[in-house]
Length: 290
Ligand SMILES: Cc1cc2nc3c(=O)[nH]c(=O)nc-3n(C[C@H](O)[C@H](O)[C@H](O)COP(=O)(O)OP(=O)(O)OC[C@H]3O[C@@H](n4cnc5c(N)ncnc54)[C@H](O)[C@@H]3O)c2cc1C
Image (cartoon, rainbow, N blue to C red):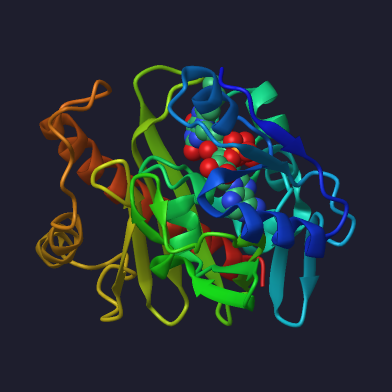
């Protein structure tokens, strides 16, 4: 591992000044479950590593206020998976967090790190897209609010500017009753990244949102506002036509070591239908529970 300077700022101002001064030479360290591996392998050779875990004024934990839920940048997957607030309003995100890596990984890995790392296979990305999350970033120019769909560019690349730090991720609480589910396919149980990771939501107004990752350079989201997918009595033909349009956004790599493109596309179709059925079921449950 190449030598680097380690900094642990105590305030946001200090962190932003450090990041702005070092630019491309600096890397943010949160849980380190992605970054430390790349430091060890030499894939990343920053001159500065800025540890954000001891910043007193960085929003912490999960807060519900003013019609939205705010998740602080250092919030771990373990916290997300156990959160009653997420289980109530954003169940699919809690489900996604619960399957990331292993217990040890989830105890370190943060949600902000998962999105900033921008792996096409990031398990939290599909649910964040479905729930229309906003990434809140702080940089030398002040606060910037980035819709999650405008955040991902391609593997390892986001629209976060050099010197910017993600401080939180916000989720608007849905105005309608919603059912949602996260599903994924991995090569084996445990610690592998997904071959397909997917989230589907259906709301009372008949809007269906489907997002998926690991089958293209970045995770993508599609919306059906016709009410067709949300209707459990739809014909197979009508449902298939819309789903196929959504699946057409997939372009799995031929070079991946995890799964071939044909397998991923087949699994995308299976998981898409499975998640849709589960979302419809959960919406019915939500209605039944008042
Ligand atoms: C064994 C193992 C299994 C895994 N399994 C899965 C899995 O099943 N599903 C999955 O999705 N992921 C998996 N991962 C990947 C990883 O755990 C996640 O991507 C994790 O959420 C990253 O968060 P972190 O806090 O550890 O980020 P770090 O490693 O600290 O950082 C990751 C990247 O994001 C940047 N960054 C972090 N926080 C911020 C911030 N606040 N502002 C700006 N930039 C920031 C860092 O500079 C770095 O480039 C696995 C990793 C391992 C080692």
